[in-house]
Structure formats: structure tokens, C-alpha cells
Length: 270
Image (cartoon, rainbow, N blue to C red):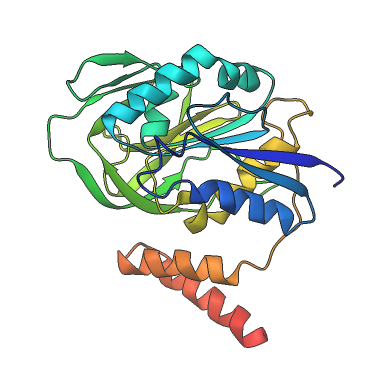
């Protein structure tokens, strides 16, 4: 495509508890496999945030989450780059801190970055821990021309309850697990080229269509409208789809065996 793409993992020293830094590696690999010139940058919290096309922000504990939000707000690069069209993926704590507010360890509200119309509070019930399966809404962004996002799979581990405001849209409806936890059965949120989720896994290892959506956004960022998605050439995703099918089968998710039959047919052709 003749385009240089910079993927940045934001503050892995603060938000690297759950292995979400793997999302940056997945994005970089899927770009490189398509012949795209890509650079993967690890951006620790004691250095200025680099200029990038696509930022991934992972999960972490309460204290590091507050430090990350404060530093990012004071530094200002991420908000500016979003205004300029950069793509952001926030996972768990990263999802919460790109919203308007989130709680600290003492349940005091902390100011988020305001990149998503999302507010988070501590839940009053048990912590949400376990497999999470959710089906994207019809209004969710597509992964390319005529390609809808398939069912999403991952692992959640959070005590927050997140409510999506009117200036963002929920990403998916929960089939198994808790998700946002606000009582409306939703998981994740998105607006423009900013997307957040509670799915660990890493989420992009289990959901390659979501990875390609983010890459398509980043590569189509010079286009109008703001949600334009560049079409990407297909990859041989047998191993990735096998992982997806394995995790769906493990929790008895509907259509999981349908995925397995498709994979078996691909394997026989090989």
C-alpha cells in the first residue's frame, strides 16, 4: 500500500497487567503480513508519547490507571492525535480511562480523557471474572466493505460498571458474561475511530476481524467520512480462527461448532 504505519502500545509499565500489550504486536504483524511498512513502539510512562497512527491501551490496577490517565491528560498527545484521526483501542482500565470518569481504589471519581462518552463507577456486586461472549450490534462498525464484525470472544476481569452516553454507541450485546455491567446487556463502546472493550485475551488474538477493523480505520484515516475503513487483503487465518472456535466451544457459545466445520473444510482443502 506504500504507507508507513506506526502502532503504539501506551504505557506498558503501568497498564501491562493482563497481557493486552499483545494487541499491539498482533496489529503490527497483521499489517506486515500484508506488506505494509509498520513500526511497533512501546511507550513507557516516563517518556513523551510518540506520534502514532494507532494506539492500544491495556488493563491495569487502580493506582497505575489513575497515574496513566493523569499523565496522558497532562501530556496531551493522545487527545490531539485523536482529533487528527488516530485510532485508539482501550481495554479494561484503558477502556475506562478514555471515558469521561472512572473510580480510583477508594471509589473516588477520577477524570478520564473524554475520548469516549462513557462513565464508570464501582459495581456493588461480585467482580466480573470469566469468559465473555458478545454479538456486535447492527450499527457496530464493519471490518471492511460488506464485512460485519462476527461474535466477539474474550476474558473479562473487572469490578467497574460502565454506562455509555448519547455521544457514543455500545459495541455489542452480551450473550455470556457481564460486559459493561450497566444493566442494559451491552459490551464495549465506540465513537469515531476510538473503541473500548472489557475483552482480554488479548482481544485481537481472539478476534482478528476486530484487529482488521482497527487497521482499516488507521489506513483509511485520510478518507471521509471519519469512519471510513480501508479494504485489506485477506490473510490465512486458520490458526487464529481455530483459537476462536476453541474458546467459543469451551463455553458452549451458539454456532461454535459451525466455525469448527468451516475450519475442518479449510484443513481438508490444504
